[in-house]
Amino acid sequence: MGKLFGTDGIRGVANLKLTPEIAYKVGRAAGYVLSKEAKGKVIIGRDTRLSGHLLESALASGLMSIGLDVELVGVIPTPAIAYLTRTEDYLAGVVISASHNPYEHNGIKFFSHEGYKLPDSVENQIEDLIFSDTKIYKDATGADVGKIIYSHDAQDKYANYLKSLADIDLTGMKIALDTGNGALSEIAKSVVESFGAEVTIINDKPNGININDNCGSTNPELIKKLVIKEKADIGMSFDGDADRIIAVDNLGREIDGDHILAICATQLKAENKLTNDTVVGTIMSNIGLTRYLESIGVNLVHTKVGDRYVLEEMKKNNFVIGGEQSGHIIFLDYNTTGDGLATGIHLLEVMKKSNKTSAELNDLMTSYPQILVNANVRLDLKDRYMEFPEIVSEIEKIEEKFDGKGRVVIRPSGTESLVRVMIEGENEKVLEEEAKNLALFIEDKLN
Image 1 (cartoon, rainbow, N blue to C red):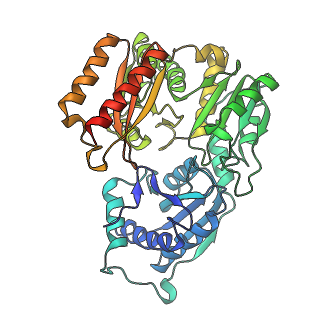
Image 2 (spheres, one colour; image 1 turned 30 degrees about the horizontal axis):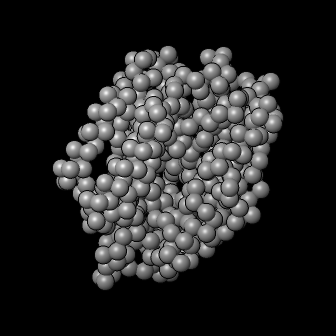
Image 3 (tube, rainbow, N blue to C red; image 1 turned 45 degrees about the vertical axis):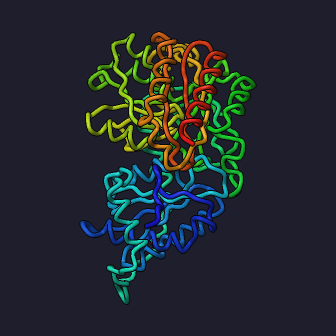
C-alpha cells in the first residue's frame, strides 16, 4: 500500500506528486469515511498559491461524486477553517495549502467536525480505500449528486472572531506585519487596525507564485528591517497558511515560539488561567524555556516534534497552551490548531496588560545556542539508532561533559535517510564541534 498522509496532511509538488487524480480519489475516499457516522456539507479553503484552484476543483468533484455538498470559501487561513468547521454545521473542513513551502508545492489537510486534524487511524482508512482494488462506495446519481455552494463571508466571520479575542486599545502603538503573500494578506491589516493601532504591512499582494518567496515567517530578516525602519512597537510575520507566527521585538530581535510560550504562560499564570501550571512544548524546545518556566513555578512537558503531538498532549491533560519553536502556538481555550494572528493578538494583549515593551517581554527567557547537524544513514536503520549501545554511550559521554548545562537530542527525519543531531548548550563553538563529531560517529555506525 502507498503512503499519502504525513505528519501534516498530504504534501507534494502540485500536478506532479499531488495530482488532480489523487485529489479526486482523496475526496471520494475521505468523503466516504467521514460521512459513515454523520452527514453534512464539507467546507474547503485554500491559500494563495497558483495550484489551489486545480486541486480544489478535483477534491470537490470527488466529494460531490459520492453525494456530499461542498462549500467553497476561497483564500482563507488554516485556523479559520478549523474555527468555522467546529462552530458551524459542517461534516468536515479541508485546507488546500503547503504551509511555509514554495509555491509549486501544495497539500491537503482535513479537519473533523470538531475542528481537530484527523487521527492516524482515520487517515489510514482513507489511504486503504484509495489504494484498494475493491470499490466499496457507490457513485451518486440523479438528485443524490452533491453540489457546490460558494460562500463569500467566511473571511469576515474569521476576522470578527479575531477581533473578539481581546478587549484592548492599541491607540498610539505602531505594528509591522509581513503576511508572506499568503492567506492573511487580505484581512491582517484591518484586524490589527480595529484595535486602534497604526499598521505598516508588507508582502500582502499575492499573485499565485510569490507566497513564502523570501518573505513571511521563513525569512524574518524582512520584518526585522521593517520594525527598525518604522520604529514599530512589535513586528509579526506569518507563513503561507497563517497557522504560525514569528514576531520581532522593538529592538529588531526575533521572538520565536519558545519566547512566545514564555511570555504568554507568564500572563496566564498571573491570571490563574494556566491549567496545572504546565506548558506543552517539543523535544526541540530550548532549554532556556525550561529554566525560565521553572523559575516561575511552571512545568514544561515535551512531546515529539509536530503540532499534532503537542495538541494530543494538551487535550489529554486539559492543558491550555502549547507550541513549537517554529511559531506554531496553540491556545486550546480559543481554537483547535495553531493560529498566527490570534497568537499575535495575545502578545499585544500581554504588552498592554503588563505595560512592558516587546523587548522587555522577549528578555524574560534567555535562549541557549542550538546546533543542528544531519547524519546520512541507511534508510532501514534511521529509526533504530538507540539499538546501538555505542551510540547511546557516545550521547551519554557528551551530556556528562555539559554537566547539566546542555543536552543532546537525536531524531530521525520523517522523509529522508537522515538522523538529525541537535546539541544545545552555552558555548556555540564547542557545540558545533561536538555535533559534527557525533553526526560522523552515527554515520559510521549506521551505514
